[in-house]
Length: 244
Length: 315
Image 1 (cartoon, rainbow over the protein chains, first blue to last red):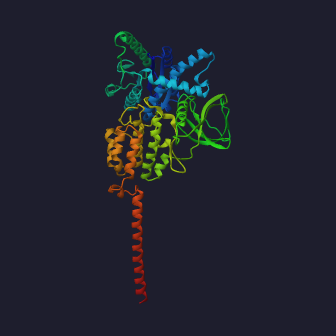
Image 2 (image 1 turned 90 degrees about the vertical axis):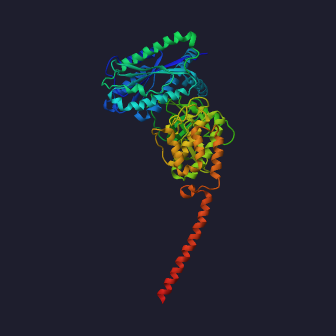
Image 3 (image 1 turned 60 degrees about the vertical axis):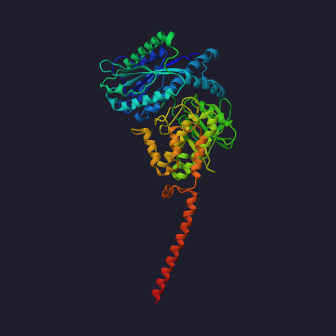
């Protein structure tokens, strides 16, 4: 039996959005479509913006039902995979909490169970996290101030791909950069099971001053719709030998 | 920080009481902080035990599950034994905690700094037997690093401390530290298999010999092999370490057996003689005898000189 697919948007940014739609609203929209939005804020500029950047990072994640984390550039690799995995666990747990709610009536969550039962439920959550399929749309802020952090971001993403490939479930990634060359968001890698050889993707970036975070999230939502469409078309003939 | 709460400060003397099992503990002091929670020394009756309070509710659960599993194993314990697992409600906040045996000792990270390299070899050999038993129970340790190993005060035995990274074999590794992670160095996946832990053991040997951690440079595979080939302290164990890096040991026991054999081998390598920090017991008694001989010769020469001097002075 198919276990279903978790959908995530992973946003890597280092500051405030300043163009287009409100990113927090876009994140809320994503959540409505069953897509979790996680945000990683790369430190440095957050201090100078008087907490506004930090607020936005937390706002987007909370509206998108995901996790936010502020990091130093060099801790990026570890953080990216930790945030992704924790968000998966959180989503699965959310589903189980909902079920518990339906069964027991009250606002019960896994945490309200006695420790022994909690342990057993979490083993199931773990098991699901290992076997479930995962689609991640990655949005990378490439505004001027991010420029020297991009090599690290690139490495962190390759590392994430490797980490997730160690799971039993299948993975798919796609990668968008914002701002793009002419548009607000540029798709550089379309849905693929491995994020290897992505050096090319980052090579053609011009640096702009604007940070259109909202439009980027909106673009990510579109990519999930496209993926759903292709999956639906493929379903009859090629579903079984899909990417592993 | 995560969306969860930051570390809380709990003054000494505070009574922590469990919601489900009703046991009471009195806070003594903070011991340290791990990835998933903060560890405190507490009193249960008049016994000292360690209490780990979770950073996020739910983050301790997997660790507790592993501790339960390892606690059921026969023979020498692998880590601390688990006594209790409960929730503490204070100021309308709920904290999950678990209570474990208090292991008094020195973290391996500290011991490696203060002891000669020979000891590192012994610790790793001991660790390998612990790991072998953990692997047979179906888990790997995952986040294996000196900070997560403790040397019990009497007897120099190693025990694993923080089981938050322990992962069922076949799953993906739950937690890791880049320097000890084979994925970071390009030596394989993060799939939980015994060879993942054995890579970390190999890195511990490299860390102990080099005395520091370092980051990867351009050609990461060659980088580690280079160190294994050029570091004098590692010379004796070169073949083992290269195997450990490449993931060619399937079982901890195999690596342990090879290490043990190399460590007790008759000293034929001149390399060890040269390095002062890694003298084995055999060479020590030898050099002590040499030392005595030298001292006697020196003493008699001085005596003779003195007698001569006195004779000349009197005349």
